Length: 321
View 1: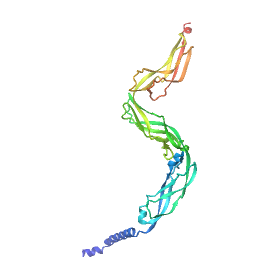
View 2 (view 1 turned 90 degrees about the horizontal axis):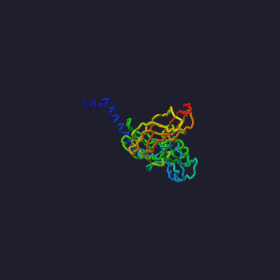
View 3 (view 1 turned 90 degrees about the vertical axis):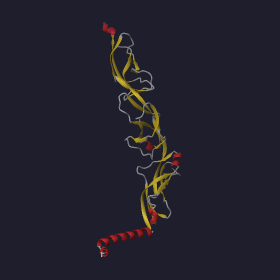
View 4 (view 1 turned 45 degrees about the horizontal axis):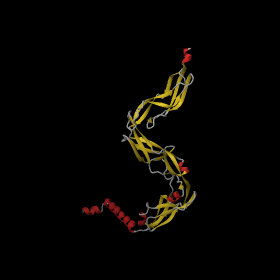
């Protein structure tokens, strides 16, 4: 009685209908392997034979938006289900020998037999081939892990000041610098290591490496642990005659901060300037951007190696009269 009531229940009949419909759908889908058509869109186009272009000092100037192709396929349902997502497209530039705009066919490769390409769009694309040249861009170092302290610091310098890149001139001209990130948290002496670099344009945007190819894999950078020392800037002023006397000497900046490596053994108490002043008459004198005489192996910190100097010279013979 209960079973009969259950079988006649509207809810049971609805559930049974869903189950039967599902079974029928699976049966039609997986046992009736009919021919169907499928469209696969936005398949990225790659380029083959670029090594041949490089050997001829040529390179492709890639567009900002990568080229793609759309293909329409026909085949058995079971085959197509394993095909979509595995299709590749390419353009062969192996036989290009001169720069210029080339219209070239797009080749579509299917990963399995039994599938027919009904249509593709586009059939051809324009490839812009340019002369390939090299250029040097400055290397900028950004240190990480530097501990904030007043007595010591770390200075990192590339062993080669520029980084070599290759590609079309139009692309190379957009590169402004190569940045290397250097972790100095564990530096306690002088350390040399190789680092990868990232190329940036003048707006600090990362450069598309399709158009610009690094010639070097990495750059060698030397990081040196430095003791900080503050010293006075002392100009060399010696009047031409004994009757001239120097006074009111002013130097800007009065002091500079030096970084001293642990291997540097000489004592430094002051910094001189490279120019020697020998006034031969009385008066007021002023000199701008006088180069500081920084000892070799010592590093000036956060300043230009220049100073402004002024002084007065009096004639003691005239003063006595």
